[in-house]
Length: 396
Image (cartoon, helix red, strand yellow):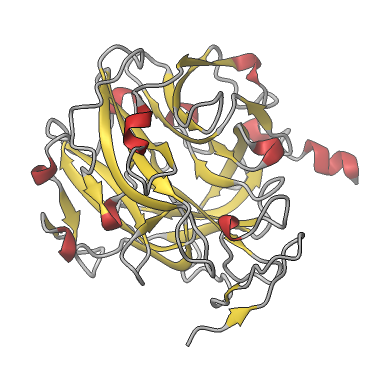
């Protein structure tokens, strides 16, 4: 029998929730990425949240955003005018513009009485063609652990840089159950530098009920498909090995084994390959209470306490083994979420990355923060990170 934490909302309503064990990441500490230095400055641009993004063949980045401008999903384009990792973080070096206010008639996907929203989960450019994965959601039916429930997902395609999308290339329920939320692994420009001829994608899910949620899941599955068969459901196969050193794949989703597991603290995570350091980088988030117990953001009402834990991981392969290299138990302004690392904004040596995320209130937008990493054998952080601690020094 699960213990229950008593909680009363600001209006006096019952907000009791399941009391899961404290959020302590069950991962080894990285012996490769030894230290992290985050820029004191964060820059905010655009509107909305989610922000899956990809570096396209035309040297721009394309993003999906949700819950803004009266629409649950729209498409944005980022043009990098000057890549300057050593400069202060601001949009003087890039532009961001909404280029498609509604990539499909999303209302038809909300006719199902279960659906309360439709959002983008992943996006991928392969040689100039954009693949946009979508997810249909509601706010769940568990009053003791209220999470945004991903019911099913599908893929749409654009061949004209996001101006229009074909929403009929896959069945609406292309992905269901544990696979309802699809997040594509990112490589280089137009998918250059990919490890092989496959596309890889991550799927967050809950091990107790076999469903997918936007926040506070248990684990992640990994799927792959030949890059010219992304829209063929039968061509997808899933990692099914217990040992990351001995990868095995099977087309039966029931045989899939998690590549990442953090009980009730696994988010809808993005993964990107940092070619400069030869590592796959995953940003993980989920929400906690004031005592570090998992508590989904949708369990509480606004403007009650929203606290998120950020954990960052590296791995030599898309399937792991994952090792922890950064942790923040009170991330962002008001519970930030969905950390991402654009491959276009990584230095050639991989020592500087840009952390992109969104969050509630002031951070309900594209939030950008530079991050330096010190790799085993490095004497110091990159010289390009020399201003990152400016504010901390000034406050002292």
